[in-house]
Image 1: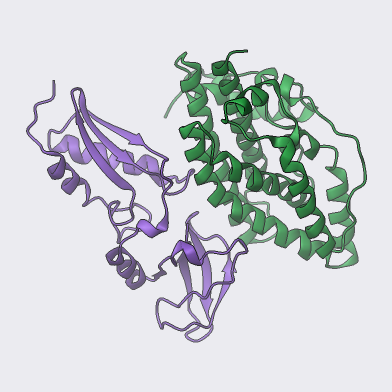
Image 2: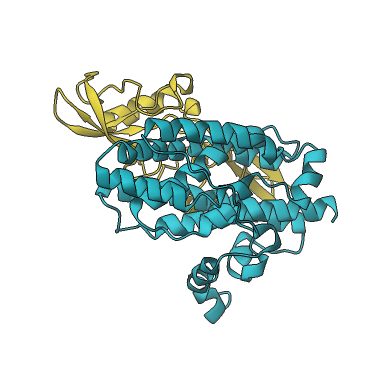
Length: 163
Length: 252
């Protein structure tokens, strides 16, 4: 039996503080993964939308959510993955984009800029804002990022791919 | 066959395609010709395993017997796998892996573009997600086929041998099965046969740009609908399923 000691907004607020394990400067809310919290007769449902279908961080995020809530006596928790509508980088808010840039990752362009052919967009260097950058690899340390190099400041950097 | 059985089998086919292709691509891990390529191939494998998880998980729900995606991946025998023969073909050299990826990703691009309009909301959602990822696979395979085809005499020869060598398999992608025919009537599955022209046109364009000849063979190797596979799938499963077969339900 669930005692309604916690409101939906309160739980959402607690979860909003959980960070993305792979890009620790942004939270799961800022990146657009945390969609909703539903209080049911049998417990608490947390609705998440996966960023990439095979994102290995999903398991960790699920665990973080459960541990965070259970530590506050909020249980049982069911994490539900919802694919519809599909996650897009457009859900990432401006605060997240700015934090990502300061962290050294070029934030994603708006999805309307994406062409089917890859690599025709200009990605600004997150360090010096130069537009003279070149793609090194379509894939980086995680599925959601590509590797670029800045021809002005000579620094390599990651670009969070538009999705 | 009921509609439920058709949907179950259809999800298995799409899920198995992703699972087995993923397995093949992951075999390149630490063996790719360059580091960036190692990252790319394993990232594709990761996309595919995620897709397999979603589709097999849904298949289990449709079936309603409590089987999870893991049960379906690890506890079915070879004859209960419905992945298309193209996905299980050995990696061969890098050209061969790229030819398979090109054939598969061009098909998947057109296929999932249609499936995202499916009357089945779950399949439509998985398709919309998949489509975003498949665009990368297709762009990557296209680039490499052109680069190798329009490269040296050696790379051109190998790329030509690769596109020729796998030519008997893509035909199966456009086959309508008993399940897909039934689902098409309910607007759940697209008509795969109608994708063939788009696929051929695109492949022809890529091969032309790559200075490769379009393969001419007419023979199409099929069998996956009935669970009849080439000899390669059994070897994949014996390795992939080993742990769950030796220690059933082992977890960590």
